Image 1: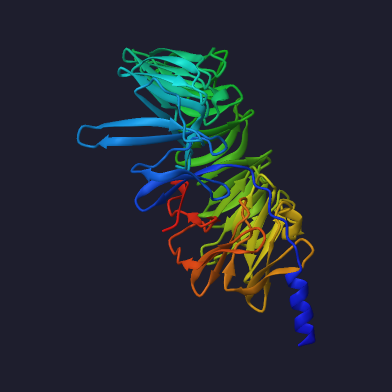
Image 2: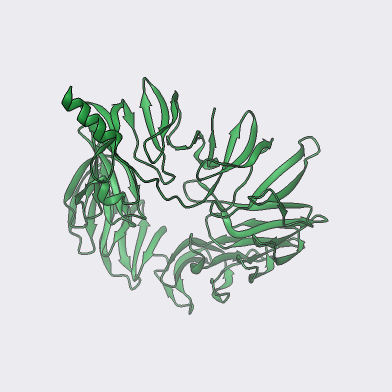
Length: 477
């Protein structure tokens, strides 16, 4: 009893500082209405709108509200509010964010740019309301998958502008599409005669507008074009390579080209020097001289010397360029194999989190979560999550939280739990229900939510993350 009493006094006497949280803004949904909260969970805009409120940049207090929607007539009104509830960017018929999507269909918005309309014509303003383009266009849309690139339509012809309203391509083309997801690599344009060319990100003509077709493949100033019914590679000086030497080109890296011929893949140079025999089911670039290949329905790694540095034994294999390692899986196993750039298996387990910004990953193996940096060195949560005030801990099959000194702040009473999030809240599960504690360990929401369909379980105060991650909203329902 004396020991228990001392332990209790030590625990109760433990002081934990509140986490410092950067201010941000998020849409919330409750009772069939939409509003806005900040990163502390405080209500900024009362939930009173029928339509979802768009927050194009969570770090800035600019909220696009839609109201008086008539679905039959196809009409609606919009207004833009700040965190004080004041209406800003006025004088236009409508204001909307420029919605865009990445390769995984995740939604994002054009940075610091909004589309405005007046008398049926469209223009651009920045988040402060400064006019970037006059309302004189028939339409303005984001170029899918590419930042700072917006297609304008005027008199039936397309052009392109950037996020400050500067013209990249004049309104004189029938079609514009990106050559890659990087605006610096340029844009494929089609003229009224259905001829195609490439205009670079610096507004110069990279490939003359005279070709029958151009692939969305780019590498070091080289482009895949079709002329007189024949495919070839050309550079920005018009010099041709590999004419009629392939059925398909999938990528170009330096002088090396992944090509397909007779339904098989290999790697050759622009000067027709074979590097990897054209005999594989698939080939994709990884890093330096190394390529992922597929043979007999299995994946491995081969280099430009033709050496198979990783035998084909995986059912899937990808290279994490931003982290610098491979992930391989086998169909009869639930775990993932993590393979270093030396082609050795470093770890195996289930990837729970990959944090590129802070350079770590969280892996579940043998029923436990462990942290590693991208050198595959095991780290503690305290080493990696150095802005946190509480750290998840497990004892006798139950979860609790300790502070930076390792002192127990939240007792081991939870069946499941999550590390503290960027807002200072930790998700905890008890008797099949989820709730939350704050950065000091105080219960904010007694576990009361099942959240069975939620991919991400996360709280901001009383609000938990909604099921649809693309909408990026929170709810208390």
